[in-house]
Length: 374
Ligand SMILES: Cc1cc2nc3c(=O)[nH]c(=O)nc-3n(C[C@H](O)[C@H](O)[C@H](O)COP(=O)(O)OP(=O)(O)OC[C@H]3O[C@@H](n4cnc5c(N)ncnc54)[C@H](O)[C@@H]3O)c2cc1C
Image 1 (cartoon, rainbow, N blue to C red):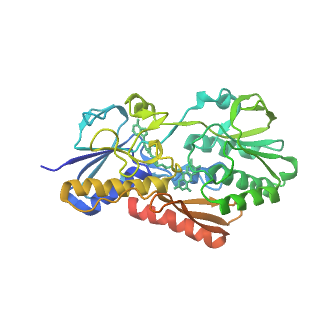
Image 2 (cartoon, rainbow, N blue to C red):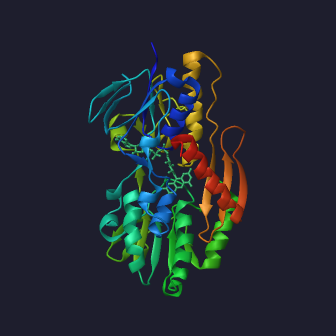
Image 3 (cartoon, rainbow, N blue to C red):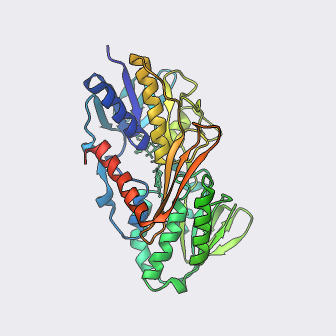
């Protein structure tokens, strides 16, 4: 009998894992992947959407194109996870598995920041970015805050990318002089894993006149006023926020979380239950919450499952990934990070360049081809 693999979530982690299992097992694979959505959107596309460079419809990659031997992708909402029994309930039925991989990403806890929904905007969800696409053209001047409401959050340089793109957007509209930009971050550095990238970002903020407030978190919004955790009050005409993150409620309810995120064994990504793994943003890895780290986790879990099914080597979680940041003027910088294969973090920094944009396009293209045969 085939071993049943159930993957929860068709994001970066889930799609990479399904692709790897299909490549190795072909029609012998018995993999079901469950997601509530009907399409995938790269996180970074949301910044293009909010600034009107594209539309949500143009960047959606429909799961209908995710067709691979041995894989069945179903559109259902997961309502309960019994990790011990490896049993999952959805709005349509129940699934049982021999291997269960939970890759449901991170959700946003809007209620954790009172006033954020009513008086501000967030650009980290598809809906939030799409709303801003309509709001931005009507903004004619005043203080703008790019504010982070909690840590950890996805893609450490993502909010910097927003602030830099905002500078160019306002400049192109001829209203930059009428706007102050303040960037509020809970971190001591805009890119903790690469000192060189952090320096480049800080220098560029200075050059563009973007005020950086470090080690501060936005805790509350009132009409036209952001309140920080040290009591500072900042007036704004436009608030662009990164909401506090948390695992999806169904993951919290499964009892797998501890101190907010799903506890795993870092080298294998296995939870406290045998053959139950957690990968990507919801796992408590201590690594950046970023698609490429979800991919390297998927590579490790794929090797574990294949080793248990057919023998072979297990690849420990490498903690390798790439953080890419647009500087908003056509140049892109990126840092190749390796957290776990050596004695200490290795970071290879690529300064902002037009060639960096070609690298990013290749990153996007590779995944479209690999996952969606696009
Ligand atoms: C603005 C922005 C920019 C970013 N830029 C980058 C970048 O340049 N490079 C990079 O690598 N990463 C980037 N990221 C981060 C990246 O998008 C995430 O880290 C990555 O998607 C995490 O992968 P994952 O597999 O853990 O979860 P996800 O990709 O979020 O996938 C989780 C899936 O689970 C599904 N799901 C959740 N709950 C349920 C449920 N109850 N039932 C059914 N399905 C459910 C969701 O629909 C989703 O498809 C960015 C993110 C943002 C917001």
